[in-house]
Amino acid sequence: MPTKNFEQVIQFHEAQTPNGSIWLPLVEVALISPTMGPVSLSLLFDTGASVTTLKADLFPLLGLQSWNEGQLVPSAGLGGTLDTYRYTGTFEIWGKTIECPIHLAPLPDHPLFSGLLGREAVFNEFGFGFWESVHELYITTNP
Amino acid sequence: MKYSVDDSQASESVKSILDSIPTSGMPYEEVLRTLDKIGIEWQVTEEGDLLVRCWQVGAEGFVYREEAAVIRSSRPSPKQGEELDWLSRNLQDIRERYGGQWVAIYNNEVAAAARNLPDLMGQIAELDKPFITFIPSEPVIWTFTYANKKL
Image (cartoon, rainbow over all chains, first blue to last red; front, side):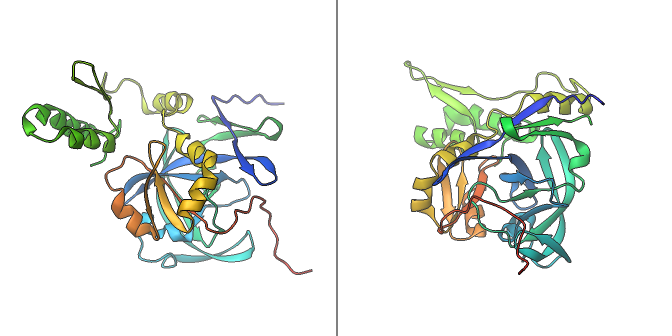
């Protein structure tokens, strides 16, 4: 069995809900907006998301005039098949600056995250360990 | 103006602001607001002196970029996660006050709010890496799943 080493531990975010507390694997990233410079967004760490996907309403941060002017990419996601639109953007995350595809999609509104941190061009840069019972995400920047 | 530890040009701008304080005639409230906006920690001593804390380059090219990534990842920015934690702790109050609006959180307070994102962006151009999110007016749904196919 190979040994994997991680340099960083991210504690899941504990949120209080009407039904008690829950733990969410939230990751804070800096989106380098061509119009605003860096802005901080919270994303849900989602190994099931092929591509990092942001709420459609965030299109002005990408310097776009509308959310659906890019390449149409039908995607399966929350709520079934969604029309998403593909763009490219730059994130700073865990000490790395990464240019990666970004899909915009009509995701449900949530105050604690604005989208999903997905795999393409992002996950290759890191190695991850996921330990649900202790609510921890382990990261190496040297996979 | 934006200020970050990686932006030496902005650092020079900060320096020029600080250098000009004694002769600028700018009201002290405005000076302190400006320092807050550009993310400079400050305090005023009993003697009335203004102390500021800001980053300066200690050694250029100190490590290779690959090593920098490792160091930065193990020593996150002091601000990282603070805004999210603050939002989460105060979510009920924030929803009551800002439901249906975009908010920018900065230094553990709602620095700006607007009904649409472009309006919000217009209010926060001078903040360094503000945390942005939308506060829904409807009850928050906390359970997520893949499903919509009718059975």
